[in-house]
Length: 89
Image (cartoon, helix red, strand yellow):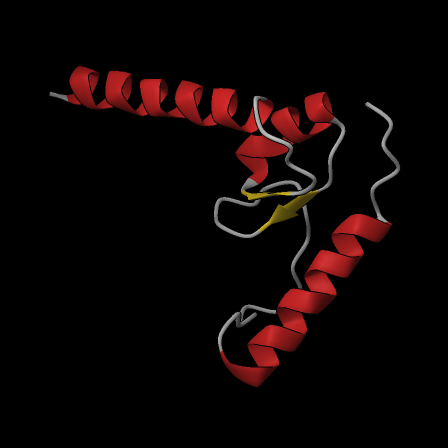
């Protein structure tokens, strides 16, 4: 049962990456797992979902809903774009 679930997950992941590669994506919203794909495509990555293991977050409460959430989301997007230099590392 675990093997079937893992295979299903891997197939969905490959389809997702193929869809992103074949699109005109300018910014990727995802987790730290999408970092390699963002680097390959040379587009900014905004870590929007967990797990995030390659950034530091000082607050345990970072909302994306409501007015504060909209402000936080806008700030995060701008910081992702500003911190993107387009070079592979």
